[in-house]
Image (cartoon, rainbow, N blue to C red; front, side, top):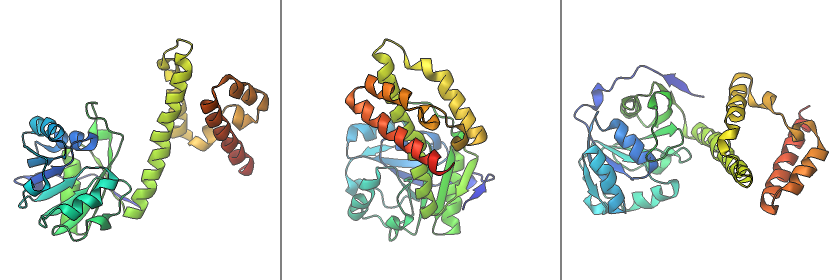
Length: 270
């Protein structure tokens, strides 16, 4: 599915210029990570204050009008929400350089017609603007329409400090993105519910830290399917019923649905 690369340098970024489209979590973290390896000319965001915050941090110009985007940059990096990519591309006039998006679920085809070549630089990670990240442990999934473009994009990933770079097609990258939603976003939502349950009785969420860490370690070591435990896995309806009765209607609905799916899964795969 993917070919992992670990030996790219960043020399081919020297003297390259770039424009970052976006000023959110991914744009901020990526921009700060690569700004010392190439010349970032501009940061574009509809919100000029947000553009200015990032541009100030990386030494570039802040703009909020699409017509202000320089059309002679070497690289254009779109780090904006998935549903904003197409509307943005329909408005921009620049047709030069290498155009790259950072989306996990958007096909590379959305960029066709933009610039001389197109590609994808997708970091398989959850981002927050001000959180510290160790890019060395982040896996970048890359794709491009030419070997030259792929080499540049791989170098951008390498410039962050990452040594985990895999060439992945749009189809497979979307599957990975779906898996990431289950593993990260859905899991975090469950932690949010757990936190609310604990806060009702005056207990901090970090009371679950050891349990969460042990669960993750077991899943990574033996596989998550074999690490499943709990009343739904055992089919303990007495405990499940008591738990549901102790919850508010919203959480009870979630608990009942997930328990049912766990029970169905292990019943059908036993």
